Image (tube, rainbow, N blue to C red):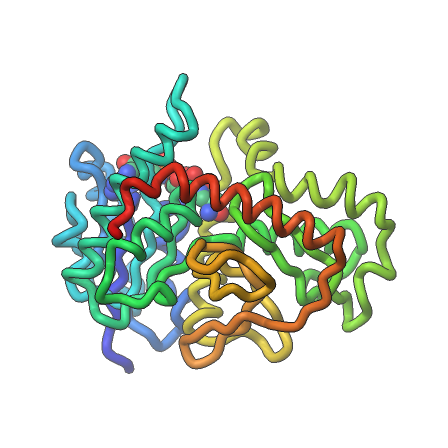
Length: 327
Ligand code: NAX
């Protein structure tokens, strides 16, 4: 049996964590031979709810669940961690402007970036889920000068999985036989779900679907899926988000399947002409705990236009918090 790894989760008493933690403790994320220590972090007023969740985890008697610790601050909660799942964030309240949302989350992710810098294991891998996820990842990474920006990622795997599920339903294919979908850009309604490289049973998807359906039904459906779910169930996606977190981390650590491409929000190195330094969702492959951008995909002018639109939104978000970023 391996040595246990330490995983911090913020927003640990929230809806996503309520689904996620049971998957992590049962070995779905890191494999059935990897014991885990969960360092769960919540707001002080939510510690009772967190204590209840910890009792439920204990009552499952998971063989891989080594220890659970509970914290009301990140400085303690990030101590020696190998992985950080940053789920807690300030939700948009009534009458709140977008800039207020960006600013209040900037405060949270500045503190978390500093705490990762000072207390986490030097090789820590970070996934930001709390929205606005891409810009929160930028803020956390800029506040952690001892860590590489490549250690920080933002979740766009839910968008990727949504695209796969909806395409499977439309074509009648098994999701397992669909590959090479790409989500470009921001985890928001400007994202560009790209099927031009996608395959069903190794055959190009674009030969099997109607372009009009792709442009006018599929793309807006993926872009607005989060809102559609909120409208239907009055709360946002939780179980599917938890599954996407598992898929993102598992692929990052254990590697992607041969020939497969997945989407991750990562720091741009200028690939595909995307401005360096912003956190943008790219097609990647993972191996030995590292991700690499899949280069050389052919992008039409039509696709470039969409990639630029979502890049522009990320640049706007960055401009709104720029005065809060360290030089
Ligand atoms: P919940 O409101 O159920 O839970 C959030 C929890 O975070 C609460 O218990 C709250 O007390 C805690 N929290 C807030 N600030 C904290 C802080 N500074 N430190 C520690 N804990 C803190 O939300 P949930 O449905 O779990 O969603 C969490 C976040 O994920 C939201 O920001 C949501 O917008 C975002 N999402 C991101 C997705 C993505 O694909 N990137 C998809 C799902 C989800 O919408």
